[in-house]
Length: 169
Length: 166
Image 1 (cartoon, one colour):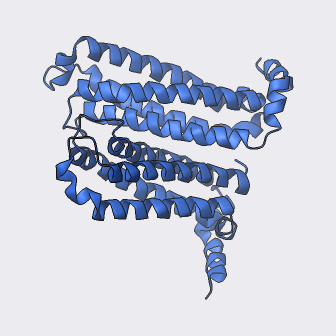
Image 2 (tube, chains in turn green, red; image 1 turned 45 degrees about the horizontal axis):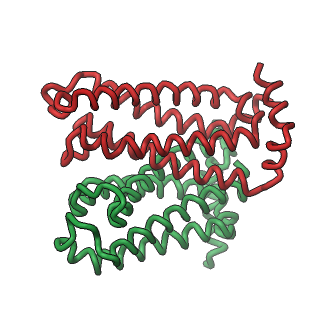
Image 3 (cartoon, one colour; image 1 turned 135 degrees about the vertical axis):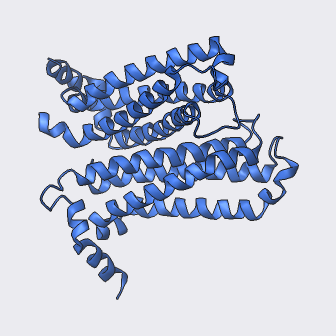
């Protein structure tokens, strides 16, 4: 089964039909799910930018990096999972259209790069965090923080643009 | 009542010029969402701390001192991008009950937050110790969280309900 067939099957599921408002009483499902998606993504982007700004040495400089990450990142991950669940439902409503949408693809490219950036940072610079936990972070940490910030801004921009190109809402 | 004003605004050269640029609204809305993230995350962080759930490594006054400038800064960005969006699509905003509910909630939550900020600034020690913290702390935390959530709902629902009020 190729990808097109998979997307078509996904779109034919009853839950996808409900997301399109085609089932009785499901007219408001898409707006409700989208609103919950926005709430969750606000927490993801807001909390991750706290971490990014700390790595850039711009904000929260009085908090050690390790303490801030222990406080903030569990919320980021939880909210990301919530946003992903609701995002999947949004995607299912028009799986074929979204998959072929340029802005949608760019959004996920940004998210993929953000994940890669995080992985590189954790396996590299973050291992010696003890040396700069309470100080101005080294250049490599600043680059990681700056890249993360830019990529998440990209995720939000392209995400919002998907709405204008697919549903015009 | 607001319809004539909205129609007049929509007919002004500045509104027409902006409306002719298809990138203005999506760009402004993207910045609007980024600002929502900053405001909402800052508010939630303060509120969770007041409820004793998160950020226990920092005192209430320290956390407020760090987070409140971001909250106010984000709110200014929200106001500016919101004004721009209203300028481009005045009718859509002014005819929709969700828009007015949102504006009312913003005035209320901003006033509450300003009062909270003043109280903590004036008597940090009292707010920092759980035993002396006023009961209003928890009331504020729960009320403001619910109001910010309602503001997001109203904001998104302007887009989904405005055509019903034309």
